[in-house]
Length: 107
Image 1 (cartoon, rainbow, N blue to C red):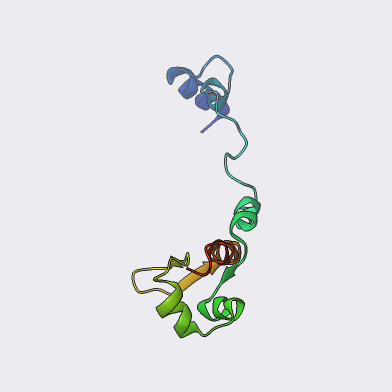
Image 2: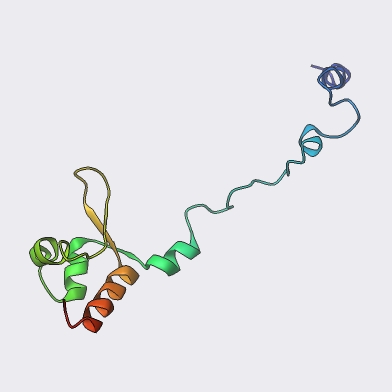
């Protein structure tokens, strides 16, 4: 398609006044998303690093069995990666949970 033909198509579509279509709709040419979506600093700071159940047990000073059968029912925060998926814990949440339970006298 030639530039002249392309300009005619734009004019027929209502974009013929010289402005770019995105500019007419007030849409930025820049991407609305993050430039590096694999890194979310606000999540890293809020949740801390992800931990496996074994790493969480080591942090708590117990076994993975104790984490699963004693601490999860008492409200230790976790995320399940799927219906039958592995458990994911976040360091900051685990530490906050420990501190809350220490203030309550271990209950």
